[in-house]
Length: 379
Ligand code: NIG
Ligand code: FE
Image 1 (cartoon, rainbow, N blue to C red):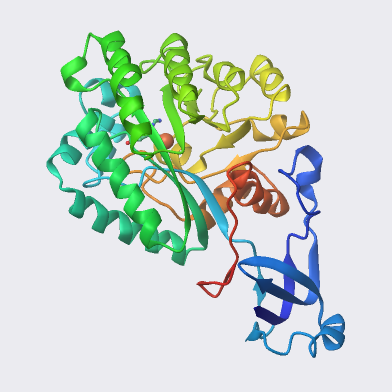
Image 2: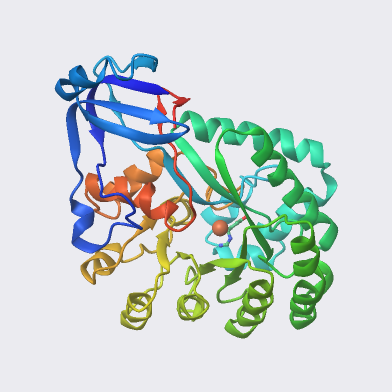
């Protein structure tokens, strides 16, 4: 048993069992002043004011005490969208962007995801593990306690499995809560260019069964967008994943109103992510289901994309989540504090809203939670 005492502010007191925070509710963030927090078997056992602790201290005399010395205790960030297993960054593409090429144009010229796939195929599992481990430590230092990590730079069975095994090793070694997302449908690999349907066949018939047989993935993902995978491709992949119990979390509507949001909601995706192109139809689709609208402010910032209409979504009563999209090209940062700042400064979200958006809402239905104090995991 552990107790944290002399907490100036215990941040985000919410009713037990709440799934997520929606709409106007996101503007309310309860902070308990001058508090204690009691932890038993990795779970919050009790909390209250220091005044209340006085009458409980004797009962919990054996608890290991951490004096917060007037510091705040926040929930750790849950970063629900990352691509941290990769071999080498793609800063070179920023020159192309400065010259005026779009993300799609860079991808068409063999840059972007295919560039990362070329490099990843050359890298050994150990090399990938070491570099991803370093990234995870940096994320943790900035306050992230739980993360989803995607495959998607292998783009063939052997290399997708290699990436997923790296994620399995990260899960094993790290005290962080980690979820693996299988994203072979990130781009059509060079050897299948012009034969997209055959690549989808490969994912459906060979890759998903192989990944499921080794229990290497928790989720399945598709980049359902203009110039990448279609709604039909997405449906086939999500249906194949569902047979093996893989819930979808998908990339949608970053480049166009792709139908990705609607297909995600239809297949009960945990989340649909990016959402730069959201109008009335998309908001209506999201209102009917439990899918979490997840915005990736880092990707929009580094790519100079239009901003997702987060205020409209919240005004329609929807929850909104914010994740980093940490990847070697379009979002080279896993700093969730920066994500919060972008949320406030560029998207004009209130501080209270970005706290919910980066914690309970990104964790929604993923069964992850963690509390950190001064960089040390206490829960
Ligand atoms: O979420 N949009 C698609 N996929 C990734 C990009 C990954 C990359 O550029 O390497 C994303 O931004
Ligand atoms: Fe992504």
